[in-house]
Length: 373
View (tube, rainbow, N blue to C red):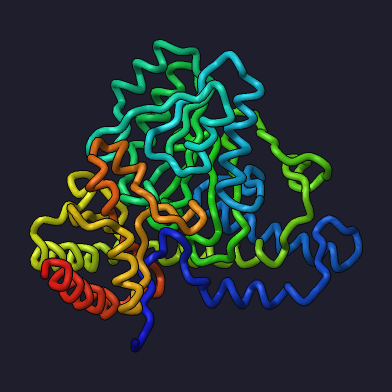
């Protein structure tokens, strides 16, 4: 095996050098941002500077950003709060959401699923029907799907929610740093982010609030984050998050340029194996993601074959304890078990090079020929 190639940015992006530098610059010091002495004041400066960079990434005011451990915490904070505060009203979530939202159906009694079409887009007519049929307090839909890279029509979905008196939550984890985000123009009341998707450290994220006047709270026991999120701030992690957010915004055009390599990748896949299915190809997707199936071949076989070639890819969400399962996203899009079990995701990012794509295509040709034999 020669060089190892990483093409799984939608799971976790390699940490950016600027983020690592920011972490290292503060981690050796006892910076508790809630302390009143000089170390505490220095920690507070680090936290507030990072908060500003995160706010700029999503075009909102830094006072509206609450720092936490990541989008899973943020998603749980919002949905559990609304379920408790409005037990007689419905929470509507799209059928292709992240597990940190979909699995809440098992513990929250008032969650219903909005169907999607065969490209993974929310069915707006079905959403309006649900809003007419049920008194709804919250609609939740991710901006960009973590498996397919499909971009939802966020502004239209939020407008429908508001028209029926509901608020709108958006998991923007896979959108930040890849497309422009503006909470106000998109009509987002609650937005969740994870640092490690944009090249920051794991275990840090944010919940950003719109102007609806509601502050959902999950963790109690301290005055941190304006008493909205108890627990000592992870100052070093927050510093890395801020540095990654700053660089992600500055290099937004780089993500757009990745579309050329994605097209090259998909053209190469189809040339070698014409029977493959590229999911979401008929609608708008982020430029870094290709999600495809080779009918009749399960994704675990392909993952292992690529790993032996030194290439890291995935079959979808990495939030299932390392398991390889059929894609819930593909099932929601109406695809059968055979195709849902064969989904493979390639996702690029800030450190990807064109030769990585060439190496992937070379490996794919070898693997495909071996499978066909």
